[in-house]
Image (cartoon, rainbow, N blue to C red; front, side):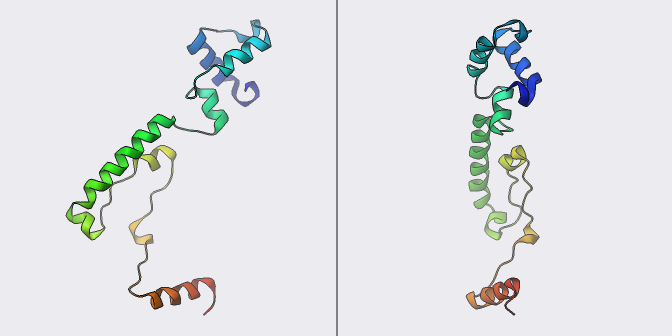
Length: 122
C-alpha cells in the first residue's frame, strides 16, 4: 500500500486513527491498521481501482433508473429523444452515447446488408 500511494495511506491513517507519523510504529501494527481501514478509504479505493464509493454508485444508479422511468412517460420518451443524462456515467467518467451514433433499420434484410458492408462482405 505504501508503494501504491503513501500520501493516501498517511491521510487515511490520520483521519481514522489519528496516526500522523506511521513510521514510528512497528510495520506489523501499521499493516493491521491499514487492513482495518474502511472500504471507501482513499488507499483501499485506489488499490481496488474504484473512483467512487459503491454506495454513491448505487444511489446514482437508482436515480438514473427513476429518471429513465419518468422520461419514458413523457412525449420525448415516446419519441426516443432528449434522454436524461446518466449520473452513473458522469461519476465513472464514461462518455455519453450520442443520439446521432444510433442507427436503426426498418427490416432485417436492411440490417443484414449494412452488417455485410461493415464486415467487408460487399
